[in-house]
Image (cartoon, rainbow, N blue to C red; front, side, top):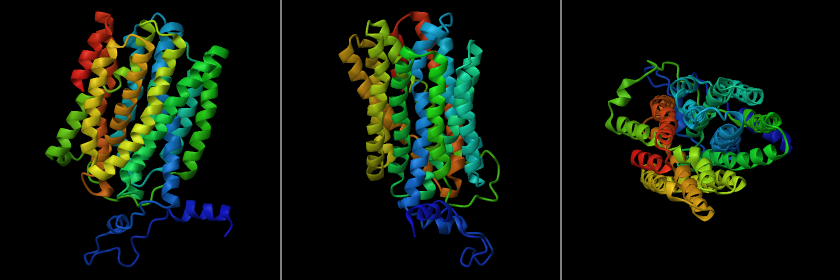
Length: 415
C-alpha cells in the first residue's frame, strides 16, 4: 500500500472501537466488558499511538506553550499597554489563564469519559485562535482579561486535560514518557514564543505581533485536529458528575490538597522573573530571554522526569522536583546579576518542568482507565483554587512591601 494511503488507514481504522455486541465482550450476565478487554490490549507504542502524542504535543505547544510565556506579556503590559494598572491586577490575567487549565477539568473529564474528544478539540482550537486575534484589538484591561485570560485559558484547558487523558488510552507502561512528551511541547512553546514576541515587538506593532502568533498557533492546531483520537469507547453509565467516594480515599484527597497548596506559588517565579530582572538592572532584552531559557530547560526536565517516573514511580520523582522548586523560589529574590538570574532560570525550568509533567500521572494510576477523566477532572478542578489565587496573592505582597524577597519567602513556604 502506498505510504499516503497507509497513513490514512492508520489515522482512521485504528481509532474504531470494538462493538459491544462482538463475541467475548460481555460476561454471562450481559455486562459490557469493552473497556476492560480493550485496555488489556494497550499498544504502548506504534505509529498510531505516537501520532496521537504528536497531536497532543502540537496542541500543548500552541496553547499551554503560549500561556507559559505570560511573563513576557506581564512585563510588556506593565510598561506599555497597561501602565496605569498595578502588577497585581495585571497578574490576574495570567492567573486566570493558568486557572482555566485546571478549573474546567471536571467538565472536560466528564465529556472525555462519555466518549467525546474530536469535537471539543476542534471547538477549542477555533476559540483559541480567535482569542489570539482578538487580543490584538484589546485596548482596555477588561478586554485583555476576557480574551487572553478567560478565552485563551479555557481553550487551552481542553488540551491540558483531554490531551493528557487520552494518553492513558494508548500507553500504560510508557505512560510517563508519553505525558512528559506532551508537556515537553508546552515547554517548547514557552521557549519559542517569548523570543518571537520580543523580536516582533522591536520591529512591528503589538497588533501584528499577536496576529502572527495567531497564524502560528493555527498551523500547530491543524496538526492536532488531524492526529488526536481516542482508542477506547465512552462509558454509557457514568453515574453522578462528582464522585465524592474518590475524596473518601486518603491517597486521593491528600494528593489533591497538597496540589492546592503547591500551586499557590508554583507559577510565581515564572510570572515575576522578567520583572524582577529588569528591577535589578538586567538589560531588558536579556531579561525577556530568561523565560525562554527556563522553558527550554523545562522541556528536557519534563522528558527526563517522565522516563524516571516510568522506572521509579511518579510520586517518587515528583517529591524531589517539588522540593527543588521550593528552593528556587526561596533563592530567586537574591539574584542580582545576569549570571545569577540565568542559574535561577535553569533550575526553575528543571524543577517546574518536572512538576507539571508529573502532577497528572498519579491520578491516572489511582483507578481503572474508564474513569481516568473523572479522577483527573475532579482533582484539577479543586487545584484551580490554588492556581487562580496564587499570582494575585504574590502581586499583592509585592505591591504592599515592594520587595521580591517577601514574595519568595511566602511562595517557597507554600510549595
